[in-house]
Length: 583
Image (cartoon, rainbow, N blue to C red; front, side, top):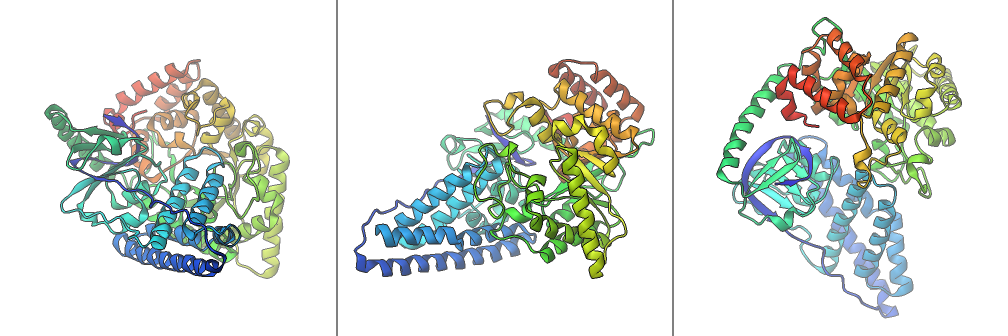
């Protein structure tokens, strides 16, 4: 058995189809001066062919998947038209007399190195994979090769690859794909995104699965637990079929909860909402039974392009989500770029330590032109439903005051212009920096609500880079220091009659969700797929029981003891959930 990252849920057994390909070998040539002009024309022609191919593949994917996954190719098209990439390639051709293939490869390698240097986060590593896919296609067009490694499936199979490029996936017969397993990738890689769109099990980040599996091997892909079993023995196959039946029954039970509220046995209602990155995820929010959106990460509207989104573009995106989910709440976080989400439009050079550098509200308060555009779009969208504004990465009371004052200033500007906006909009602050948590009583008078961002709070509190595999074992959500700090924030908010939510990964785990409800959290926001499992746990206990559980956990001083205790409690409440949400 090989272990990777669970990218798309499901369990499947089948024959493998192994895909092995690489970049064309780049010729090294020195041009004669008189050949430079022709080489430049050849480079532009290759770019034009690549552009046409990507547009055709985008349109093909749009028809096949009927969702917005085809926008993956919009990022490719932006790379092809990127002025930096083109200008540096042309400079090497003109000044160093390099052939177009070598000049383009040198430029791409340099850009990929820069992009990959902005932190250890998986999202950026996956954007480098996009760059390699564009490089392969342009080089193939320059050298006269077919840029599409055709995957000719004759019968249903599980795809095994170093990575699946969007170009390849767009041409697949989706009825023949049973599942996927790749050497590289993460939860936001294209293999993961496309697998979820196709609703097939997928495991990524397996490192060397292409070396272990050959076409025709029987394998089991477990997209719940992130494992691949190669050439299983008969007893393992029997276990597979037993587990598959069990999973189907559990998923059917969870689906029945879609329209039901996340309410404890004794009547306490928890607002169970969803985290999203794109407006197109609204359908997933609804289908998984979430109540509105607890965190709309707006930075992804910026990260997939080379220019800044206009006020009108942003307004349309926000208005679409708010109107579709009306009257449910939609909490939209203002731009949180920087750190692991580097937007080329916002910074000219990377920070030495991006997680502690110029990010989120720090950028917005410096670049008020960008902040104003987003706030105008947000405030205009308030007339379409229940929109709330959330400020990220607030670390001082001064930042909070300045941000709120600027929001009020933008509101007055819109009112003078006669724009339609809601008479009042709730404003909240993320609590994800330890200084904000410690100053919570001073923050609360200025906000309508707070949302605890556990991912960053844990990272900063425990001094652990969550993207660094060398210290990943120290990133512990159930560290007693984390639990006690969160508890102190919740108590302060309740005392001030301000509602408190949690929007980090802890909100999506039945183990920690049960604990958070017992601590007094009234809103949890998780990925849409996590909502049914969390809802089932909430509906299986009383608030009195959850509160007693939380009080006991707060007496523990050991991470292991807290984890073991919560696992035992969840197993007693609903043993089946353990199978889908193993810690």
